[in-house]
Image (cartoon, rainbow, N blue to C red; front, side, top):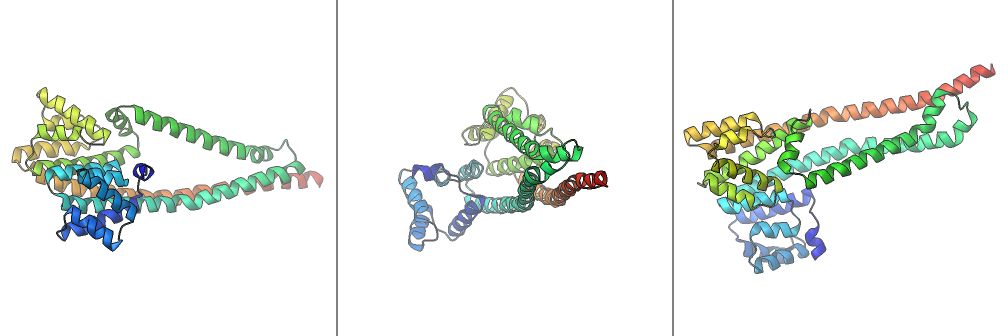
Length: 333
């Protein structure tokens, strides 16, 4: 069971569980009744129900129970905050919508990557076959022949370099300050805009929920430091220090390059009107819509570009294969 505890659930699976729990909470069930109902109805696998029952019996909060089932830290943080601001049902609905959009994006990514990947594997086998059976019969001094001969090594070598760079990047991400990491990532062309929009929507919603429930900023920053997300903890600590030094919330938020500039202005304007919580929630909803719209637009652009690239590789492969054959025919004539 400890292995099950460490394993993360897929996004689709998380979405289905959240949807089920949201329906039961909305119907008036409390957590103990939900667990009994799930046990009898078999709507959720027994291993998950047993884990929920075990965690509940030890007095664990709902967010910790979800963490033990394998929910992502992102979702667990949202649930933990929902327990504090007291609007769990609304938060579950928003989490369900969020997971639905994330699962659509992941599905689209798989669709974009699968077919080109299969073609790349097919091309590698073709190049290996050409190198072993066709090239020995052709002139080794021909440039096209040399290109075909070295393409498999070049491709596999490039793939190895990419994996090494990804491993180094992952290690750097794990060991570095998350604020420093996202300061850098937010400045990247193309990717930076998506990071800004995502983080702005995420934090605007959570801050809006907590402020709307009447929590003071000092309380919110303390709560943030107690969450699972390292980024949440660091921002909470940084904001608390800024508040103690007399810097306003809106002014400190404006210094973070991974937030959109509008967020700081929205906070400043909302504080003046004393409707900050409500305005942040509305702004967060609009920003989420913008984020997912941009992601889908990017997917629609990337997919044809990938196919064009693969098509060019195939054309170049055939050109490199046929050119030495024609040259040999000319020499023989």
